[in-house]
Length: 298
Image 1 (spheres, rainbow, N blue to C red):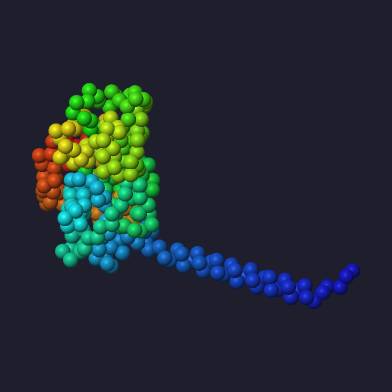
Image 2 (image 1 turned 90 degrees about the vertical axis):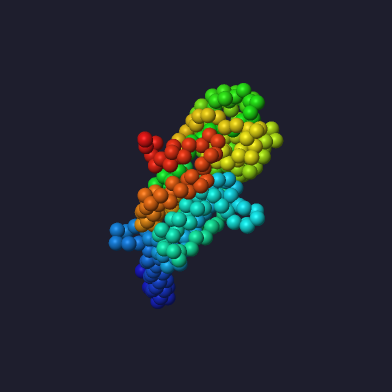
């Protein structure tokens, strides 16, 4: 039998010391990571709620290209529209008169990621509350009930979504929307061409690069407001699009607070005043229908 070398015991001890130290570091990092996530007594995340109340500011993710909802005013350099005014009212309702509203301009493609990484506290950007999106973010109660439809040239003979069921017809849409699946449900042969934003899609349609443009009725109404002599919106919608305010997944406390603010604004008349301010007199637009909170509302 070979004698045991003294150095082997020393090496083993040093290995054990290194392994013990490594395990301690890993456990400490896990502990600190868990502690960094704020939560209340129910275990729900309160990170957004705490940030909003400590800073007295709500950072909203909004569009800069959606007329009637959130459109950049080239003269002032600031966005204006229904969503801008509603976000301001919600901010004041939650934080009081001294509460501040900050806007970060986002795109259709980036809005959910901006929420996830904390660039914004909430997104109000004509975003439809869908089952798939509810898996990855929270939604507030519905603040606007829209429906998808098409705009076409006034001289067009295509008067329904089903009329586009031919591969020779193309429809402009915005990236990040649900337009592709929605159109192909009724016109599977139609070609949907995606553009980065509403302006690009509308310009392509106006230039004759597509036969129509698809989006929500209220968005399209804003786009053709100055071109109503050239383009028209179809009379019927083929989807129901309930708009909700997007909030980071798990931020239940802040979501409840936003819902409470919305309910108060509906009750005290602020919501209806803003609806009339921005949509009264818009051709093809029905304020009563768009004010619904559920599809079954009377």
